[in-house]
Length: 106
Image (tube, rainbow, N blue to C red):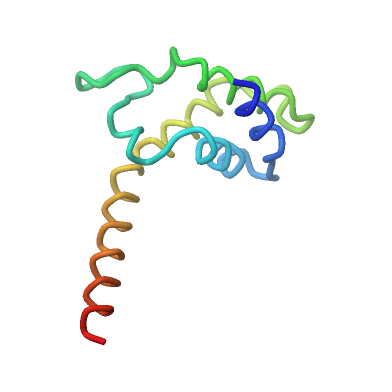
């Protein structure tokens, strides 16, 4: 847990969504996220109750520029990043398939 805290403290950007994205990338993999929903919709597991999610909120609020930002704004950024996980996996798989086919030709 201390390692996660240390990693998230090193990450910060001028745009909230970018800050949240970078913190999420350090904590969660795209393969992990499709199994979760922020509030547990569609029979998925609940992300908002995880300690890792709490760490993201805490770390963002510790930053001076985001100290007073509402929780709903951070939550929105988390939800957007989660919603794109399956698409990122799909794009990565397509790229890997393309790379393999190019390597097999040469």
